[in-house]
Length: 397
Image 1 (cartoon, rainbow, N blue to C red):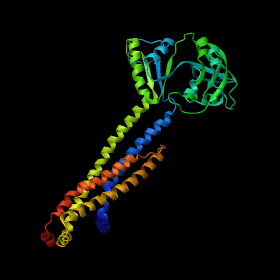
Image 2: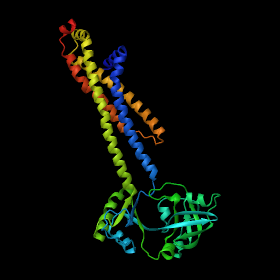
Image 3: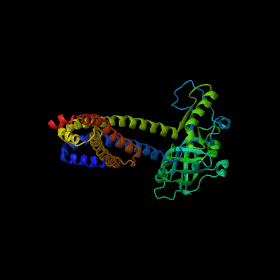
Image 4: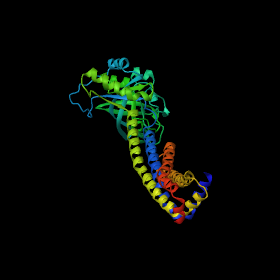
């Protein structure tokens, strides 16, 4: 078999142009599959990096809103009874956080910033993985006392305090028509964290919100933390069923999960990659047809060689194996070249697009094995044809 492979390489060297054209379809097919799967995997990683790793274990429930599809849906009150019912009816809940929001105009000196302020419970920022650049988090005392303190995002801090040192400064806050004096307790680091846009956010103790801004204890948003991110998809289904039953209508609340959204986008990306890879694999089949055509021509050209080998005692099996190895060798070389070219091209494209480099080794292996199988399958017919040649007719040319 080794001798047959060496002879095949010698034959390739004698017909370089023909060999290259035979390889071309296989190389393009293998490289295309690798590039497509690589771009799909790279896009998935970019999605994960865009949303960040924090907040993937959170399911968000919002009451009402302009996105409600069912106008006849009954609104649910997100109060303490709702929190208790969630714990009792939905599985895999680690903790439930309540959150309110209001529009704040924050002024320091002659600079003002208008942004959404969120009334949050102690530990909310830590749960989301939001780290402080300076200052301190809210304490339980801040919550119960309704302290007039705030933690601001990096962009808000840069606008109000271009010289830095925001922590400890007092600012004037206007919400509605009511002015309040607040102390900046901390500044968040610039980071990405799921559905939480921390850079432009302003956070205050929910105790202050419920006492001074809106005496209503109901929350605008409920953040349900799962015991593990893998439970978020099933939790969305459970929460949907629970709220539909509780309200008696569908669409009473809006339910979102970053993990579920990422999984859906990755599923779409994966499906597209498979479809495009299947289309790219067609070029391998086209290349296989070209190889079969070349091998038929090769058998015709080497009839006398076949006749001599048979006259010297070569069996039909040996003749068949010789041409089958030659056919498989073409796709073997094409597969190796295609894998190398696909990796290089994938790196170049992802570098230009500033995407993370990602190669699926399984795609490289499968496309390579498939290319070799194409050579064997399409080379089988010419090999059998060569093995069945009559020695006398073959020697006669």
